[in-house]
Every structure is written in C-alpha cells, then in structure tokens.
Amino acid sequence: MLTGALAAGVLAASTVGPHPPRLGPERTGDPALAARTLDALGGPQGHRSVAVAWVEDGAVTTAGLGTTGRGGGPVDADTPFETGSVAKVLTGALLADAVDRGEVRLDEPMGALVPGTALAGSGTATLAEVASHRSGLPRLDPSPLATGRAALAGLTAGTPYSGDADAVLAAAGRAGAPGGAEPVYSNLAFAALGDALAVRAGTTYEQLLAERLTGPLGMTATTVAEDPSEVPAGAARPVAGNGREQDPWTAPGWAPAGVGTHSTATDLGALAAALLDGTAPGASALDPVAPSEGGRQSGLAWTTDPADPGRGLPPVTWHDGGTGGTRTYVGLDREGGRAVVLLATGTEGVEAAGEALLAGAAGGRP
Image (cartoon, rainbow, N blue to C red):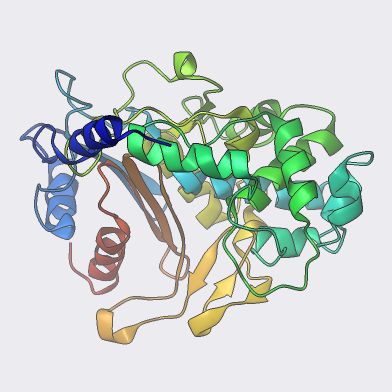
C-alpha cells in the first residue's frame, strides 16, 4: 500500500508537470496534407508529434507535424511511433495469410495450435472468434499480479504489461477462451493469437511478422521492441496529457496485441495501399466474419462501420490504438480506394480526425 507521503508525491507527479502537449510549427512532407491534418485535428493542442499518410489511387502522400519530443527534431514520414493496438491488424493479416497457406482454418480452435499448454484445454474458441473478439477472454490478464502491475503503471508512467509468449499463453489458458461469447475487446486474446500462430509456424512472432508480412511489403521500419533498449532511434516519445513523458511499452509476449510494436507513416501507408489493391499478404483479413453492434461488421482485427451519410462518410474499415502516450488510427475507404494513417503522441484520440479526412475526400474536397 502507498504511504501517505508517497501517495501525495505520486499524485503531484501525475497532475503537475510540463505544459500540455501542443504541436510546434515544424512541418515536413506535403504542405497541403499537413494543413488538412491540422484542420482535422482541430488545431495544434493535444499532441506533440503527428505523422500522417494519405493513400489514394495507389499513391501514398505523407506529412509530419511537430517534433519527436523536447529537444527532438521535426517529425517526418519515417519517424517511428508506438503503434498500440493498430498492430492487431498485422496479427489479423498473419492469421488470414496462414489460412491462405492452408496452415490453419478459421473454424479451428485456437488451443489446437499450442498442444501441451493450458490453452490447449481451455482454448476452444475458434480462430475467427478470437480474431473478432468473441473468444470469451477478458481484456487483460486477470491475475492479481498483472492487475497490480497495471494499476502501478498508471501512477508511474511505466508499462502495464510483462511476460514472454509462454507467459501470455499460460495466462490465456488460465482465463479460458470458450468461444461463443458476445464481443468483448481483448488484448489478451490477440496476444495469445499471435503467439499461437508463431508456435504453429515454429518461430517467434517477430520473425513470423518479418518473414510473411513486413518483409514482403518492404516495411523495414516496423519493428518489435522487447525492452526499452530496443526502441528505435529517433522514435517519437510518448507524452501524457499533462506533458509528462511516458515510458515506452514493451513486453515480448504482448507484441501481437501492439505492445512494443513501432511503425512509421511510410510503412503503414504502404500496408494500407497494398490492402486496398489486394496485394498485401492476408488482405482478406479486411472482410467481415461476424456482425457487431450498431450495424458494424468485424473482420480479422478490423472493424467496418456502415456508411454515415449525415457525416459524409462512406463505409470505413478501421482500427485504432493507444499506449501510455501515443494514439494511432488506420482507416480505409475500400469503395473509394482511399486510406489514412495517423500516428500521434499525446492522449487525445485521432479517430475523429481520420474520419474527417476520409469524409472530406469522399465529399470531393481537396
């Protein structure tokens, strides 16, 4: 238990700090895209670093706004950011690709991929159910130790995750993945899914990602940091809403859910372009496999929203993400052949900005 003095110190550290993040005047890449992005964000407040990729008719345009951190250089399309849960779409693509290769089936129990583990007995949810958040697994490891770590991380700006692939599979096995459940968003499910796919392939998740997805697409800047020493040089530094810099999130077993994964606007723009034209490995992950609430459809990691004429939005297939101080979004207008990638440091979401950019393009605005 925190002592009174320690608790007061932690509270002061979490509420008093540098000024809230705000984009500086630095701009790189396409000036028009930078201006559109700033307008979609509603101004410079709330973020310190933003990188954007716009995909249309197979061409990728990029821009950067702000700096990588206090004393850091300007952001550009090749600045690495923590992806957060946007990396789940990488895991979804690996699953779809494994199906295409005949290695797994979507109606196969996840536990069948990891014989000899606790998950082999409790993981009766199918791969399709796991990848569409219907596995029955909770959002996080429910053990007291993991719960305590997450609570402490919220106070100390540290990472709430720990453990390798074996630890994640064990946690999922203890929690149980019975399937047949109502949709409940689960980081534990996606971490276990990616780790199980790697076990089936006889490799690690990081190697599987490089061999089957990022390597073939030339996404050389998309990496997994297993500890803070492996965070890419020049990465945008995560920052909280009060301006306090946050520790990077790293935990190798949780990489398939987006912990420790870094990417750039260049790389994710290339992925979005390849998904739109169907040349990306596992592109079928975009296709719905189950209905969700509000008329939404769930693919393998991806969510597809129905058209919203009142907001000028076509159907959008998307995923977002967040860490202790980073917010991310990838949205695809598959009918219009457009996509947007937004990577930002700060704790204000960028989903609305991504939708505004897609709606503006769909409405014919430049």
